[in-house]
Image: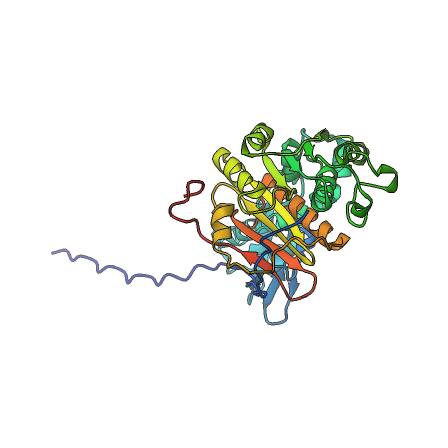
Length: 40
Length: 353
């Protein structure tokens, strides 16, 4: 009688090595409203 | 990218905690990479324009044997896509002569710095500027500076419109005119001066006042962008409203600039964003603050005109930092002050909704 070989234990997948590029955060300036009546 | 090279303006440096900074500290260009293992620093060091991406990945694997081939290639590809790297062996650019390339070399360096898109040869923004057709309405404090900057930048086609003559009180701020020009039409003087600034730009002028949206619609035909530097009629429903209606219906981007003494503000409008009327509707009225008093110096006029030109160039190069539909600017009285307003399109707006 043949026996079915037991399956190999699943290999633990290593996390993929990668780099991440992060843009710098914005520093909020104070904000004023624009003029309504410009000159040129 | 065949031979990647880190842009000189974006040269990397280490912050001391395993972090790499690229692009200095300039928002929204600069970025950081956590690099505890040294992969990114090594790859960046190898990106000096002498190696292909495959060669860099192979050298990276040799230095870090625990990196797989796929991982090493991914590190290189991530850096190439970051915007901090350029092609060191650029393809040809047939649209510009060698003379033009020398003339606009500093502009190319600027666009290389601020443009994070991958480019074949780096001249793409200048080629777009050369192909652009810009209408400038008004050649006063704002328009004289804007017209000069657009001419110097190499815009292919400029049409300048102003009905006035040069007056003595113009000379404290209007860049194109001298004492010898008093009494001459501004359009004619501007044409003489600007042709000497850049003979490669096709410039035409008209000494006419725009008297309504019909006349404005006729003028904008055949142009890509309107630079509105005129202030008459000033009141709501005046020339800015005409521009909003005409450009909005034509799907044409437009920029409007000016000053109120020390306060400089410029509006950028076009497809994909709220129109002038919608943004204006969201700005609270400031009674007594918006009368057009005549006081101005060269700084306000120059800043408004140069910002108009900058925004026109940003529109034609595709390098506007955010979608159109906002005002921005500065005030000379508050170094920490910053003008900015953006409001959503009104649901019932016939122009932009």
